[in-house]
Image (cartoon, rainbow, N blue to C red):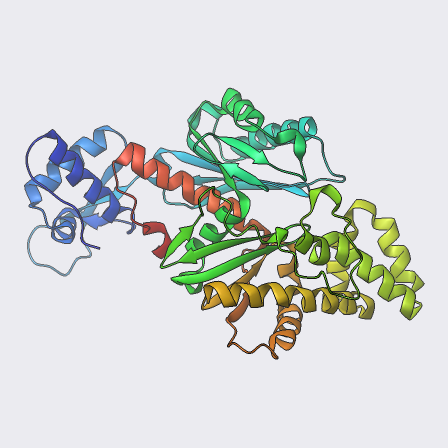
Length: 417
């Protein structure tokens, strides 16, 4: 995409400054002459914009480039001051909390992950969140008032425009605007709230070059199941921002091994059959069939963390755990086949806790999809895994800084960075 530049008038100078900032942020440093050539402006116009940006603390003139091979006077270098501001990304779920602080180029300065020993109520989750944010900011050498923007991802159906969670069965006490209100009281900066899977999809595409597909579906698979859908290079949200809520698919009415309609914690029919609680149930049943009392006792002792214990056992090759994963992979493959029939994505990425199972999980899914009449999409696991949400939150914060502070038009720049 060509840079938007102009000459003359205050508005046009702001447009030029935005183009200069965009180019500078992509390089460690540049000479003024090279920058002028890159953005298509005169050296004088670039110098005027750089002087104004330097006064704002966004750019810094450096030493002369004495290593340059060009004849004549050494060029003066200039760089974008990524340390001039910081943004916050947060991922909150019933299982864990992840917080990260990044500079204005997206480099993570400090981060922290907190595992909940048991499903927290709203008060505990919020108190833990605020305390963790404070610690992470301190580790980054920042205070609450230093942040330029913060973004938060949570499960459920979220209305980003209103800043409210409309439905969050796994953490019902957070319904409404309580999360946004508590954070605003503490941080004092603009805050954005969105569905975690949608942010995870953006984070995966931003950080991983191989994920910049124009047609992809990212499936968050853990206790709950959701999808982030990218069509023609854009995140598809649907009419009410809940496109991809595939946990509510009902595909197993005639399945003779169905456990019936239980739907704990407001689970939808699909995630009730493939989610974390069902995986634990299948692992216990497989251990009982195999007479593996040691594994069954291990799961019982794990309590609220039994799902994680199953995932660890899969990595260790425990037969009962592998058998349980194969059962749910057969069911999950039906969901992928539905997504393929409707959307026909080129790539499906498995994210969330189940991504820890890696290639054995993909092999099981491919095996169960082999009999489908349509060609199936490529399957890969997320490289960011459970960190994808917090990276997506950082990305959104950076986009908003660009839009509101730098005057840059949103163009999907981060997806290609």
